[in-house]
Length: 109
Image 1: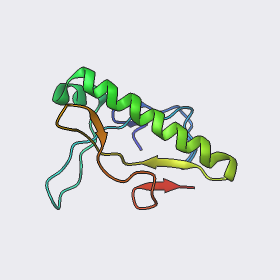
Image 2: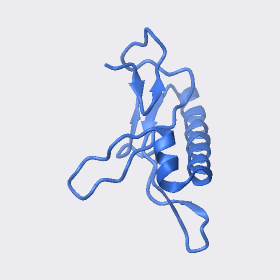
Image 3: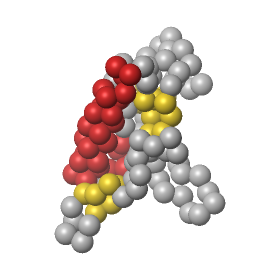
Image 4: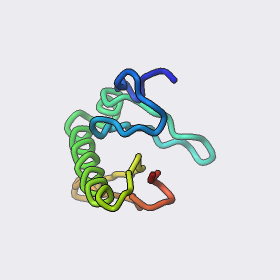
């Protein structure tokens, strides 16, 4: 509708459900119970959690998405998007905190 998502400008002429040229990192805030998460830009995410951690999450997200998309594609399945939730353990290491790539949190075409 707007040609943008989370600060990314989408290519002109895109059709509904058309595959993007490359994966996009689209961060969001975690809403209170019962509310919807709010999409934010990558720079807004960096303001909240710091540039280093935001970059690490972006890189890991894109890497995981690409691995699963590459596995699904030859089987005739397009991984449109997925939700990932990251956190840090007691030592400050980045961890994946919830399911991902399941039908419950992903769209496959």
